[in-house]
Length: 60
Image 1 (cartoon, one colour):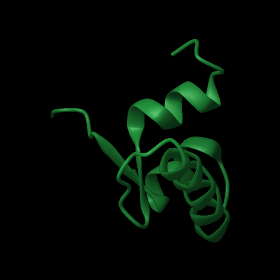
Image 2: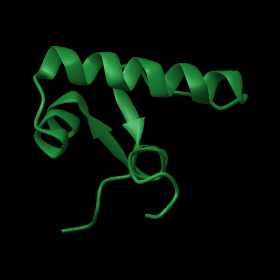
Image 3: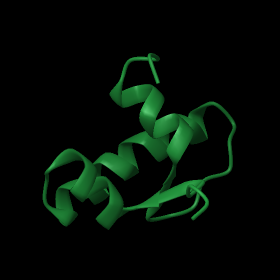
Image 4: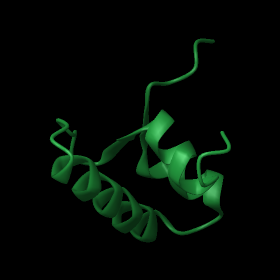
């Protein structure tokens, strides 16, 4: 299966071992950062590449 380009709250929650409501907060924060940089975002989803970059501090 092809790797997803965007992660949902369920994906983020499973990946980080947190609740789905907390995952939505993480997604909102990351999307706010992306919006400030001029990127288009999708509510409730986050770019997999940006998520991995922020989680691993650019080591992904």
